[in-house]
Length: 471
Image (cartoon, rainbow, N blue to C red; front, top):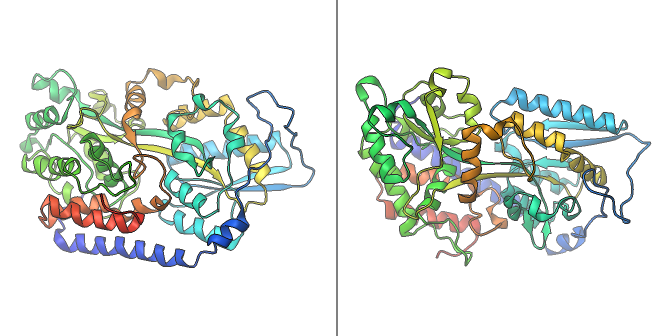
């Protein structure tokens, strides 16, 4: 873990974020999907295909082929264990080919950092892959420029009530463009033994209790600190702060489609995370000055498994990693995140969909694969091995009895997607990659910018990214 890097590290990282966003905007200015392009591309529904999980209708036509077909899927690593994840997809690909001998599914692994640019380039080229798994915000953007095939006929394999509630994020302009894949959120991990030594018998229920418990268990002489939050300039910090903002009663966007980042509620979240906790001395030294972007794993995971922090907001699936450290895991409790001033907890929602490129030359087989994927046995294996929640109701695995899995289920009603506070926004596209929430925190922590001024600065930046007015 790095110590405080000072303003220089912040400035460099901020410049990188600005350059990434400017590059994105320049790249998109040349897109072929203007008004004429959208009309030419069209968004008509494809014909319904047979479902493997529901009775066929009179309109369904069976799929078979005598010519070899190769489906290409762009996938991005999202499980806690990458080795297990890749093996799952290797096995699934082989099983699909066994069922359809002339059809091969190739899974190409791409990085989250490159996915947005690759998607736009593939759409512009007219030669995209067939399927992708990515964040809902990127899928909606690609749908808004005419690059994604409507999947209403795939969604119809189940009643809407059976799909996860997060499916609302996949509907754009009257159509469903994605099918739920990975569902989950952050939860609260805490060291039961450290709290019990101070007479605290249960997990903190709100921010005041969280602060008080963190103070009680902090012991610098033993290298133990009460709280762990992610302040890195990366997706994790933006996701953590999205949850804190929601728990405080705030939002990035309001119901009027305005940028509401600069609000008293958002200020309360930043004051708690960037002023109250640091001043209380309950954070490990240097944790507020990690300016390098990170992906799934962050220094918080190592700090927790080393027994150096007593509480942390982490993905529910991190439990699969923590369980490999029995000395710490046996002393760990899990709960909903502590409630903020709103009276409820907040969390960032993972709701990654599958989607099909409109330019795919194998749209029928791409949809057939999605239907195959949602066979009960496949989804049970997905949940069991990944730790993510099921994309639809009725799936039961051994994880049902795990407290961390139940905590994730109980937290999901309070989880929101970055910038999707009140539904999908096309311009959300790559907004999370600008790291504005983390950059705002770093400005407050490292440059000592007052909270209100920092919020005003990044509200303006978010307004530019979303092309929406300030509230």
